[in-house]
Image (cartoon, rainbow, N blue to C red; front, side, top):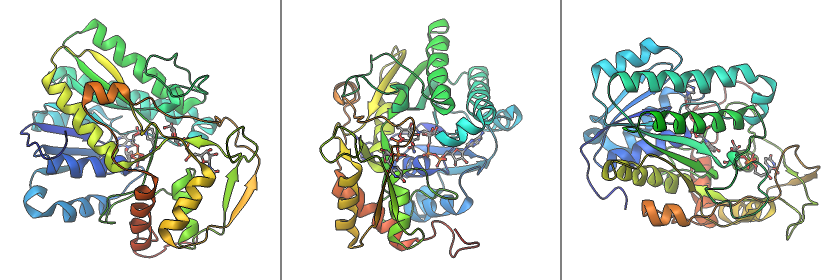
Length: 357
Ligand SMILES: NC(=O)c1ccc[n+]([C@@H]2O[C@H](COP(=O)([O-])OP(=O)(O)OC[C@H]3O[C@@H](n4cnc5c(N)ncnc54)[C@H](O)[C@@H]3O)[C@@H](O)[C@H]2O)c1
Ligand SMILES: O=c1ccn([C@@H]2O[C@H](COP(=O)(O)OP(=O)(O)O[C@H]3O[C@H](CO)[C@@H](O)[C@H](O)[C@H]3O)[C@@H](O)[C@H]2O)c(=O)[nH]1
């Protein structure tokens, strides 16, 4: 299943200017959907929307409507829902930096919880009751067993993770009380890479927290070396293991989820993992990126990062069976496309550095 089937529905994409949002919007437009975006550019910029338009061309761009707005402001949502009748919402908008959430939990509860509660209120008012929600593998905490299966017990390790856990519970409560809601919770593992064109990709503000954007910035000379957090884990090479997934596979997972919502009226509220099912260590990822880019990535072995799990990867059976979706790309393709984005856009969406990194 994927973007070859054409659809007529109109989809609201919250946070559609962000990393996963832009890639999903491209696939939605190719799939024939009409798309409205609401984003406040808290962690993104107008250039990302311009790039999406360049990528899909002038005809499909006519089906894209961008709205600057904030989910915390109900009037912004009200304005949007009064203008357009939406068939479903893909809800990406949220803050996602774990460390920042520990330092400033109120910002995370305000943005992620209040923003989402407002969205449910306005959706209910306008009788739009189909939602695909960005959850995270973070809801498995430090899993006792791997692969992670959707019916495992859920835990939160930090305020960011708590917002995802609370929002999953809120979704389940709302759907239970009002059975005409259909909600799919997608638990992403580690989204990486970029569109194969190299035109859109991840562009974090400041020093990256996540592995792949950090490696990318070392490769283009913005950072001197990669700190490898932990080299004494009980794994094959001592570094931690994660399930990295190509953002284009993830985007297609959202299309599969939407099609499921439209074809299964009584789906209820259900969670799916979006991962590859394969675990890759930090050092293996560094080696794969060096191969794809031809660049040496200098590393420094450092102590473990507090709160990190040893090994996390997904069970992919449920998404395969019920959504008809599975990841196509492996680590080599992830690194190839990440490098294309990095080498074409060493400063992300900025044309040249405005300040020193
Ligand atoms: N990237 C990951 O590693 C990862 C993993 C698991 C889950 N997720 C979740 O997926 C979603 C998308 O992640 P991403 O990587 O694309 O992040 P991102 O920061 O690139 O995109 C999020 C977008 O939402 C916007 N936004 C934030 N708060 C808003 C608000 N109140 N009103 C309007 N717009 C707002 C931001 O400006 C940004 O464009 C998030 O909910 C995130 O928690 C991401
Ligand atoms: O500079 C770095 C950055 C990361 N790592 C290691 O690389 C691995 C992956 O780290 P990272 O890319 O930060 O991802 P996770 O910590 O697995 O968390 C991501 O994946 C979770 C599950 O989807 C999401 O909830 C989080 O928001 C998202 O940051 C971990 O072992 C890190 O210790 C390094 O060694 N050096």
